Length: 231
Image (cartoon, rainbow, N blue to C red; front, side, top):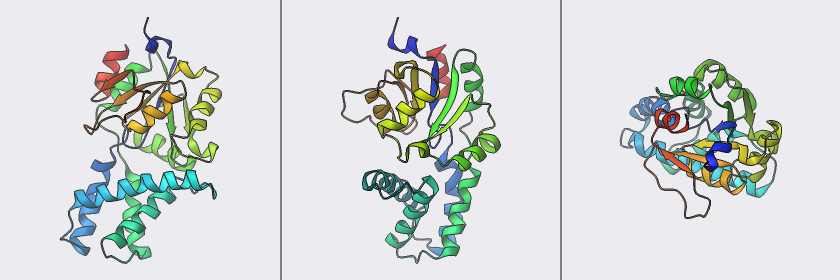
């Protein structure tokens, strides 16, 4: 019997794990830059935006000035990156690029894998997203009947704050080791493991896991491999 055998619920990260952020957002970014700054590559702009958003989330949690919420950190990051690239962050520019976040799409192999996994596990979204935003994305974009959708907003902090994972286990009426975090963000896997969760790292982006004793028990390339390994 392995540690993974104790898992009763799979808790899924949404942004970048189930939902293909880059594939969904770069067409809008490309169209924007073609009009505004054709000298800047779409890949560079997206990499800057995503990296800055994570920094905004960490600052939000560490500074403890009130939880701004996921979409607000996205907006703040965009504001910063526009200025970084010598573009005035006007409301029109912000709204044009922020609108694309409403149309995020899942990776193509996600739905079939979730159907398979649901035969054995409770499937739960555990995300940094705002509750209303998660409701929209799960209902209209992922279109899968998860057993629960849990937002980090209830903790007033973003993952990998330990309270996010512990609260999720409590809401699911499970011990922490009965939950398995599935994420394509290495910090999320490490954060979950540090709280006693099991973790599966979906290495979609060919990135290493942090130098930490809290390593994921399982590493896969995509959800098809995840289902194959857990069933």
